[in-house]
Image (cartoon, rainbow, N blue to C red; front, side, top):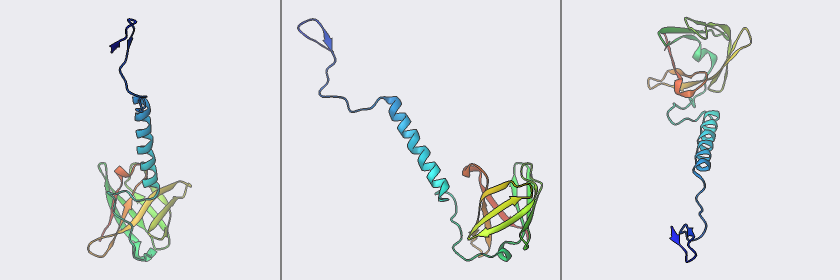
Length: 148
């Protein structure tokens, strides 16, 4: 603070402040982070997720019995070559329906009309395929592995 000859105190500053208020800066940062998260999820290109296979995939390549661990359950997913599926032992998504391939993406539709999103085929190091994905937050996604 500087005291002027009139006895008034004023702040010492050279030129106007170009720093936005802290609240505004925080909002801008959160909006930018949110937009990046939405865009990266929508594009399916999260840096920690394996990329979809670039090889051609047929329903015969993917048909079979698959499994994954969820909470304390060993979930079984039976993908039939005729495009039907059965999911067993899942506390949230057991049921039956149909599945199809759109490139490396798998689309699931339950018989009651509900859909599961965000599943896709990835390459395994041994040359086989695996299935990656999940519903909701990609941090909770996982892999389905073929049961021999």
